[in-house]
Length: 574
Image 1 (tube, rainbow, N blue to C red):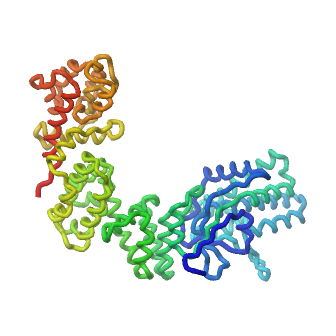
Image 2 (image 1 turned 135 degrees about the horizontal axis):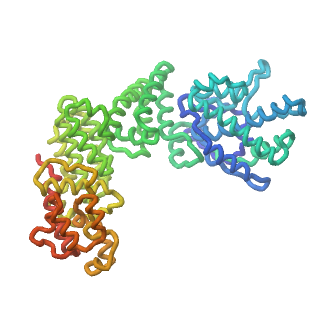
């Protein structure tokens, strides 16, 4: 077979299951995971089948084995498994008819015909072998209680894994639902028509089958596929590749380690974690380059084993960096300072700094925890100036973080000052930051906590205190209200209202009850409440009749005052 061989064709379900080939799910691929939602969707599609139409169930990706007799299922195991279970459910219905002495001989022949789609039988030993081999967790259960239709003891059912329970529930589901359909169509005792219906399903369900020679082609294809249901993920492909390089003893250990990792990190977040881990140690890559990068660098079992062990160590750091309450921080003497900065970064909805912090925690925190806290501050202030206020694209920032991460990993730099020097180009200068802050708008509905955070920091600056304000009764007041009234139409056109209602200069802090009472009232009435407010950022509005009217010009002026304070709050000094 030539390198990068790829074969694409349309196949019907009966062709897929009667071509003489067997199919195997890679040993450590994800367990069976379809549930009632997917089963019902499949049945609805089946019920809509007619003699005149086909039903495509998306793309399946198969990989050739060395001997060509077996195909490895890269993408599609959930669908193939479920359709196999559906066929077995009909076999079970036929066996029930036999137990009722209905057309026994012919039904035995029908069962043998249907069994060819789900298993092969040795001519010598008469032992049945499933045409589809599932992974280690599911295969023996699938063989015993689905293919062989053995009774499932209650104690086995109770102790079975959740995925094996889903396999059995699937069998019960399809048998019950198909019987309901057959009864409704008055063919529940007519085996000929029951099997004819299943043969119609086998004929009308189709796939686009893509067969490839190696894992790299499979991964590249996988990125563009969007098949039905809960299918194989990019993470599964990477895991399968790593495990395929190792011997059986190493794989057992790696499997345990991998489970530890996936217990800490959700499956859908694994590609991001893997990419951040790599970006903390070497040149920047995107998620689409992930598999290619790993497969090029890791070529043997020893390298795969060490890679997985490192992932375990770093997944603990990764999870902690996304959770300010993680026990990792509580065990340190810098918990409150770390918690504060991590909460800020989460509020900013940024994650590009994580590779840098992974490196910093690994190389700097153990010996110099205070330096790590300063690096957290650097990340927070840079992200606030560069993205939250400056609204700049994050791509350049992510690449700069990556270069700095590599230097930390290689122990070329080890202090917060050195980190700052490497990130200095991202630090927006005071003049630019003040100008950009003076015109920044933030929609309250999209991020109310961010606005509250900014006002809270400004309040501490106005009041000349470091004490954080707390209390559930504090709220954000729009001086120009979100809803226009006749009074406010005197000072703002509708276009101006839309523009200025979300300007930072239009926000102050206020007691929640007072805020609710004020509503859309006029500015003089609001000023009376502002003057009594305990918040300096709010009461300063009324000092010396600073703003006799609340109009676009005065919102700008107030925001310029905020901006002068802001450049002192979000500031780095090295």
